[in-house]
Amino acid sequence: MTESPSRVAIVTGAGRGIGSAVAKKLAADGFAVGLLDLDEAGVKQGAEDIQAAGGRAAAATLDVSDAEQVEAAVTKIAEELGAPTVLINNAGITRDAMLFKMTDLEWDSVINVHLRGSFLMTRAVQKYMTAEKWGRIVNLSSTSALGNRGQVNYSAAKAGLQGFTKTLAIELGKFGVTANAIAPGFIATDMTAATAERVGMTFEDFKAAAASQIPVQRVGTPDDIANLASFLVSEGAGFISGQVIYVAGGPKD
Ligand code: NAP
Image (cartoon, rainbow, N blue to C red; front, side):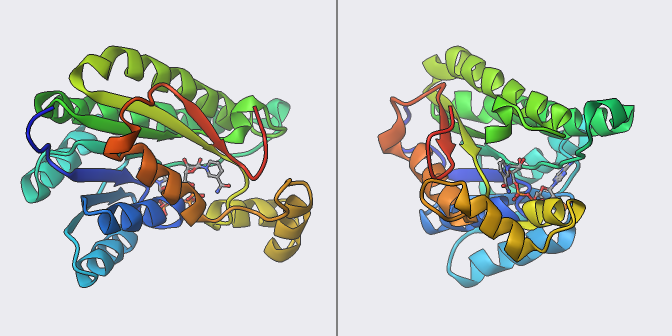
């Protein structure tokens, strides 16, 4: 490790939901934060909120599955804030359908955002981490990695991210870089609200039904994930690498 490695974090999908909460938490922890998303308004607002609270932040828009856009956004953040040494691969989408009805596009788009996106982002950021001899990578997996009806694309992507994480840990460990995955259960965000709509339930009823099946009897919040991300990127988590941590209000694996 260098004397004091650059404390700059990049969070993808930071425009709303879990990514937005993680960006705010890392800013409160003292990181300068690059907020990346497809949605310009969300990341601009997020960066302004962090700045208003006294932190450093910059926003960039991109599609994480596009290699050129990834390179451009990472370069922009590095120029504006400094070398990124923390990467949270959080951008995600669902395109749920039973296997027999799933289209090629539904399969490809989910695999592209989660897997190709995390690959492109990590390849672009690792050079800053290895130069700094310090880094932290956190990938957003899901309990769906264990199998979930109607999500053959999403569960394959989220299980793939677990293998991706373990291999990053093996390859990058000698550069002072750790890689871990957070696998959330039900977290109340626009993503789960959209699922409620798809199955014809109000979000309140959908959350209540989910909570009744969860040992701690509530659904998760974006802050539940941000709290673990904050720990995993901290100095104190330096001997934890290649792990998948389920944050689901009960045992899941
Ligand atoms: P969300 O509210 O839908 O937010 C996802 C964000 O990712 C959105 O801002 C979205 O932008 C952005 N995004 C989507 N595709 C992108 C792309 N190609 N390039 C850049 N940004 C992109 O979702 P969330 O619930 O916060 O989920 C965040 C992560 O946690 C995802 O990886 C998800 O799979 C995972 N997760 C969530 C849950 C849950 O219960 N919510 C559970 C397990 C895992 P737009 O607004 O422009 O679409």
